[in-house]
Length: 243
Image 1 (tube, rainbow, N blue to C red):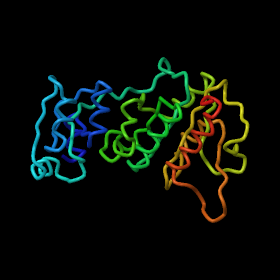
Image 2 (cartoon, one colour):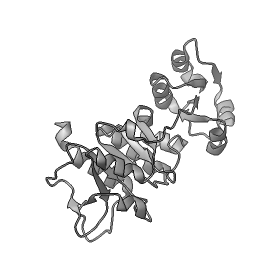
Image 3 (cartoon, helix red, strand yellow):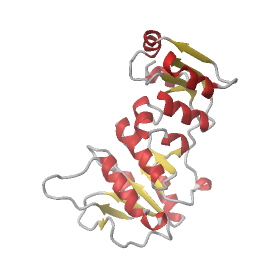
């Protein structure tokens, strides 16, 4: 059940009762549920009459999964379509833009925060990791099931700008806007671009941004983890919309 093998078959795996329940509730195509005996009744309720279900003993479930971190239940789910961003599909609300987030834990945390703070559309660059990776799904707590994911390129930032979005690069630069301070949010719309932990925002994406935004930190550190920084920035930028 390696992620790359599942991906080649058009599948992903949701681990644990919470993710399985949220995949079913979001009307994803769940092909099968596998559970241990302790989770059998709950699995039967989720499977209903339409989803094939296997209830196994603990050792057998471990053997099927190939790992023990499954929390008693797994679902095999068809991968949904991953549309390409287009000019005819511009969202009304804020957009989170992730050109190259390669750590699945960071990506999952960012997706969870995006949903919490009203960023229901997420643009992912081709170098970002797979949003249906098991670790990403766990870190997102199922938020990925409720988001509009789009495959994007740097040119899509220009399309957002044409529609009145303020396109902001999260970067520690001398002329950057300070997060939390008053800022004209481009007619109420903002696109927040976050870079890779090591290499930052790719040059072609940074060039397409209007300006930078930063979080002041003490001299004891040079930067924040991207998932932490992104969560703070999303919260600060959407503050007027949450009240």
